Each structure stands twice: as C-alpha cells, then as structure tokens.
Image 1: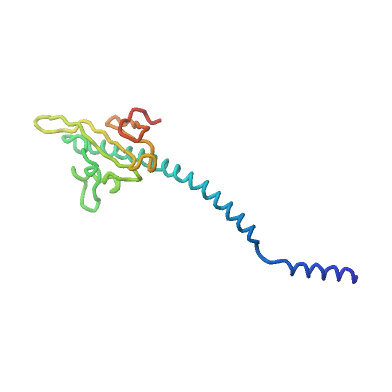
Image 2: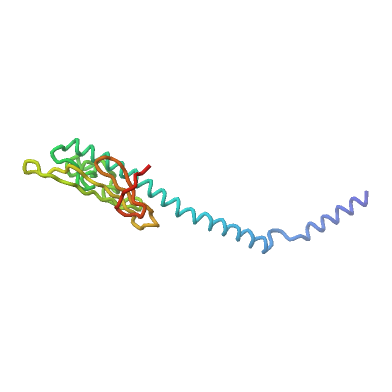
Length: 176
C-alpha cells in the first residue's frame, strides 16, 4: 500500500513539473498549416467570384429581354427601348411610362451591375415619318476581363444568349 501511495506521489510530482500550454514549435506548425489553408482557399475565391458575376450577367440579360418584350407590348408604336434607363425607373415616381417602365432594378438600369457593364443598341426604321425600334442588341462585358469575368454576353430580340470567350462583344458561341 505504501508503494502505491509513493508511486502516486511521483506521478503527481511529474504532472506539476510539466509546463502548461503549447510549445513555440507547436504554435508555429499550427500557424503554418493555417496559412497554407488560407492560400488554397483564396485562390478559389477569385474563381468563384468570377463565376458568380457571369451568372449574374446572364440573369440580367434575361431580365432585360423580358423588359424589352414588355416595353414593345406596352408601346407598340415605339417598338423596343433604346436605353436601359427607359426599362428602369423609380416606382415611387408614379406609374410606368415610356421613359421609365420600372421593370429593371436601379443598378441594372444604370448599366453597371456585379462587375459587368451593360449596354443596349437599337436598330430603327422610319414608319410614316416616325422612327420605330424594330430590333435591339444587349451586351454585357466584364469591367475587368479576367478579374470580374472572363466572357462577354450578348442577346437580341430573338432572346438567344451568346457569349464571347475573350470578354468582348463578338458573341458567336451559343450559351448552353
């Protein structure tokens, strides 16, 4: 019995002699692992953000196409809208009008949304002395190719969305 008691006393003495906490080497190893993980994650964040910007641009082009169809339906003598501002507008300013259809959010109607710049161009014909927009093309190009997106997107009155892999407006490849 005395032996057990003395053995237990030795263990207690060893336990109190050990330092509490982590050694410097253990802390350095943990910090190195954290830095490596952060570097791996930060490389993927850029790719994920570009993909998110491109997805937002595609959905924005679909929204513009829908707004153009509504605009042409509401104002058949005018045809399509030739500016994004005509498709946007502030709902608190009164009812929708030819200069503000109120179909697009403010950021998209301004032409700059989620790292992409949007523009609308019209093709017009004169009917009875009045210009009527019988076609349009909407484009979305990255603000900074390679950073905010890699591809440019285009659509027209047909509703088909195409893309330019170099980030410009030469959209020849159909979006699948």
